[in-house]
Every structure is written in structure tokens, then in C-alpha cells.
Amino acid sequence: MKIIMLGAPGAGKGTQAKMIAEKYQIPHVSTGDIFRANIKNGTELGMEAKKYMDQGQLVPDELTVKILLDRVAQADCANGYVLDGFPRTIPQAEVLDKALTELGESIDYAVDVNVPDENIVRRMSGRRACLACGATYHIAHIPPKKEGICDTCGQELVLRDDDKPETVLKRLQVYHEQTQPLIDFYTAKGVLRTVDGTVDMKDVFGAIVSILEG
Ligand code: ADP
Ligand code: AMP
Image (spheres, rainbow, N blue to C red):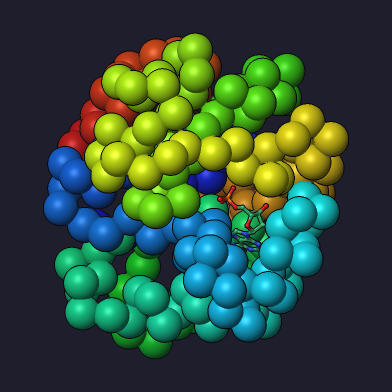
């Protein structure tokens, strides 16, 4: 099963992608997580990506597409995957589509997690991330068991540099300009499904499972 998570930054794509990955035993592939791991390890790719990420801008397609195609070509992706944060532009979607078509494959579902802009800034300022394992929490809605510490791996949680309110507003603008057109792209392919992302995360997940198993 190949699934794409769509939605504004902070809509809950990563939260849901992790639950999907666990239930269906497929890898959760997040380009944002790959970039953050590279930044943490001080790689050349990480330093290049950080310049864009800190401004709330997208990392250029040339860099992003290669990373994603290399990742989904790995053996653990043979039975499918859930993509979180990719594609984010029409050219990225076209490259993915072409690569899959060449393999005789296609995306099964593009799930749009719908959350209005008003809710997003509040969500992002409360988000706490584990840069070691990629887990995400929210100080009010989804707190870790021990404040500031990741439940999964015990590392310290951080407020992401790009979750500061001024950067979030820029990211929302970039989302509407460059990523939202993907909704029409996947509607035209007949695979778009929309869920209400404002309800409790378990209910969002229930709606997604109904779609995947419907
Ligand atoms: P994205 O991957 O789309 O950027 P995240 O999954 O990281 O978004 O979620 C953004 C923030 O909102 C996180 O702090 C997360 O814990 C919180 N969150 C996710 N889903 C919900 C929900 N259904 N209700 C409330 N908060 C949520
Ligand atoms: P995310 O973790 O998905 O919120 O991504 C964090 C940041 O990483 C984004 O704001 C972009 O700067 C960058 N990024 C992640 N995925 C992509 C992508 N597919 N295309 C371009 N930039 C990306």
C-alpha cells in the first residue's frame, strides 16, 4: 500500500503517518525527518537544507526528489510506504508519478488532513519534537509521559527552529502557494480522500483506517 499524507504544516501528517506505519507495518518516510537527521549530523545536505528550512521555504526540488527516490528504492519499501511531507510541489508529484509508472505502480491514496489556518499556529507553538527518533508531541493535546522527554527513546524534546510563529506564517503561505495545488492533482487521479484533522488524533486515525480498509 502506497499512501501520501497531504495537509498544511502542523495538520497532523506525521502523527497519523506514524500510526499508519505501525498498523500496516510499512515504513514512514518523512523528508522533513531526513533533512533534520542530516542537520543533526552536520552533513553537507543538512547544511544546505537548513538555509531554506529556517526561512520557512521549501528545500529545492533537485535536492528533495533524489533523496526521496533513493529512500523508496530501499528494500523495506518494497511492500509500500506512507509518505509524509512529500510531494510538496507539482514537479515533485510529477517525478514521483513517473518513477512509479515506470515500475508499473501507483499511489493508492492521497489523504488530505484538513485543518484551518487559525488552528495551525497554536498547534505548532505547542509542538515538541524528538530529533533522535522523529516522535512528535504537543504540550497540551499530546503530552509526553515525562515533561520534555521522549516516551519512545528517552531523548530531550525540542521546539523546532521552524515552529516559531513568524516562520509558521511563512510556511503556511508557502503551503497555500506550492503544496495545495496537489489536492487537484490527486483528485484528478481519483485517489484523494479528505479527513477532518481538527478532531482527536484517534478519531482522525479511525477515519483514515476506514478509508484504507473501505
Ligand atoms: P505535521 O506532520 O502535519 O507537520 P504533526 O503530526 O507534527 O504535523 O502535528 C503538529 C502538532 O499538532 C504536534 O504537536 C502534534 O502533537 C499535534 N497534533 C497532531 N494531531 C493532533 C490532533 N488531532 N489534535 C490536536 N493536536 C494534534
Ligand atoms: P516537515 O517536517 O514536513 O514539516 O518539513 C520541514 C521543512 O523541511 C519544510 O518546511 C521544508 O523546508 C523542508 N521539506 C520537507 N519536505 C520537503 C519537500 N518535499 N520539499 C521541499 N522541502 C521540504
